[in-house]
Image 1 (tube, helix red, strand yellow):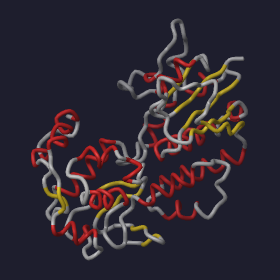
Image 2: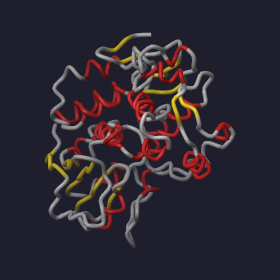
Image 3: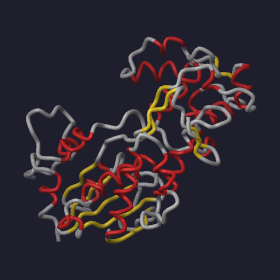
Length: 326
């Protein structure tokens, strides 16, 4: 029985060493931050390899290939064909759930493969500690075979998230999504990161401001996830959000190193060093935002993406109890 594992960001190395499958294919697309990759790029990533592709632009570039393994230049679907079982391992995070629905949307177009697909969902993320016992599987829920309902929900979810407004995702919440157990919580976490009708800030940004009553440095803001209570973003994206709060025309946060304005976004080490030595505090404006007396977006530029929705000051979709149109 030949088994193949397809998995999300973070778990590829440990799964490859677990002996659970002949080969493990991790996926590293990040769909929750920035503009979504063009459809042509996603299609080329999954298609047969061509010389026009750059480094890390093909699914095979991320695989820890066993000695003698073949098939690096095949499309993902062609590579999967000889395997008897195709097992998907994905976590509860928004990043993993978005990768999962994208992948199921693709696999659903290949009926012969779809019949072989099974799913294991983890109740947190895909990071496995050195003592993790894959045989016991204490952190995952075996969902079993994937059927027509799961593929349909994945297709709807992926289409909704790519839409130019968040409205289809709101509509999706009115459906029964229980076939993909962790999709609804992930969608709600993503929607909470839309600007609030009261403050113009998403859930993580407002928690940053609230936490500055207790903390003056970035480590707690970035790494005390259970206290922060938001789980969508990684450390890099959290840094971008903090910079937006601190370096705009009317800052809500004081004390973040001004040199971040000139350090290249790709120079993560230098940016991290600035974060570590910064000592943060709320400005008077920031206190007013936390008290719901001011709207951050009235004074500062908004220019970011939420799935297929481009959020700007003139086109600011907001989410609270309901979705509010610009």
